[in-house]
Structure formats: structure tokens, C-alpha cells
Image (cartoon, one colour):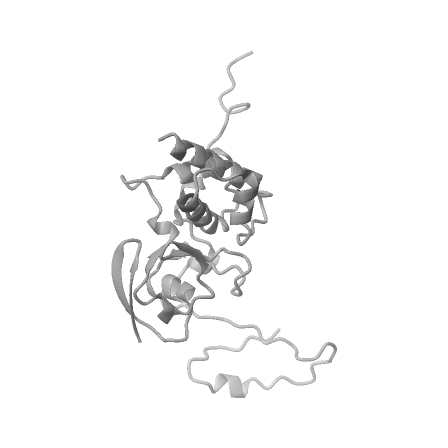
Length: 156
Length: 70
């Protein structure tokens, strides 16, 4: 079936089977491999994308459900000039990146939280990251990066 | 003591840019021309001895290029 939606501010129309996931659609049909399949059952969050502003596990979204929606993947996260945005810079600065497999999901989870509040407590940040697993860092540096970004965006 | 260039200085991770932008490619992100896809057939019983393997039915399915047994 034809699935039409906006991804990273670009309109796309993809002919794809009706029974694949949004994750498969993004990775295999659109070549957007930023979202990763970590578990395929909605537990790890490596497949996280924003769908109409909401953080979702794209491995649990059927591709036809994306029809008419606005999807933001990690490939769409950047500064106006195309470089790293403040959250991405802080992820690097605060040492939140090790193997990196969780990072696309973590960045999107961070952006989703910062869309809702610029004054999250560390506990609230951790709650917002509850659906994103990281095996490398122990989460501290990721929380630091999001907390620092929230403060910087408050001060703008 | 002579000035140390790297020891004791913060270092920017060399692959961090690619990882935070989603550009970094992991093994499952690669798509090569004429790439084949493999699946493991696992035992359906917890303890057994393999007496015979009949790979002919699998090889007869269109698109199956090979059946690899150990």
C-alpha cells in the first residue's frame, strides 16, 4: 500500500507492505538507519522516533499508522545551519556517547522531554528516559547532557 | 616538565559526531548489492543427537541460495 507522511520535514510516499513496522519502513525503504532495532518488542527504545511530537517505539508502530503523520528521526535533529544542535553537542561534551547504539533514541527522548519542559529535575529526566536502555554509560552522563541542555535553553 | 599534549587534557571522541547524528553505521545498517540474508534454524528439542539433516526441501524453495550446516 501507499503510505504518505512527512519525515524530517520532507514529504514522502512509499509503496510498502501493510504489515511491516515503521522501523522497517524507515530503515529499509527510506534508508534512514539512525533508528536501530535493538529488541523488536518495544523494550529498549533504540528505535525511538517522534511521531506527531510524541516519543514512540517505531518497532511497535505499524507502517500504515504513520500515514498522514509527522515523523522526526535522528537524521532530522540538527542546528539550523545543519550542524550539531545544543543537545547533540552536550551529549559529546558530557561523555554520554560510548558505543552509541542507544544514542539516536536517547537524543530523541531528550528532545521529546525538552519539548514538554525546560525545568526537568534529574528524576524527571530519568523517568523520561525510562524507555531507553543503555548498556555502556550507566545513564549519568546522558542525564547530565539533557540537564545542561535544559538549562541552556532556559537561558536563551 | 615539558607540556603534555594529550595526557590530562579533555579529548573529543573521534566517532561521537557520527553517533549523535545517526550517521554511524553499525553492522545491521549496511546494505550491499545482492546481499543475502541468513537465518538460524534452532533445535526444537532441548537434548538430541542429529542423525540426519535433509536440506533438500529448504534448497527447493525459490530464493534460497544455500543451506549451511556445521
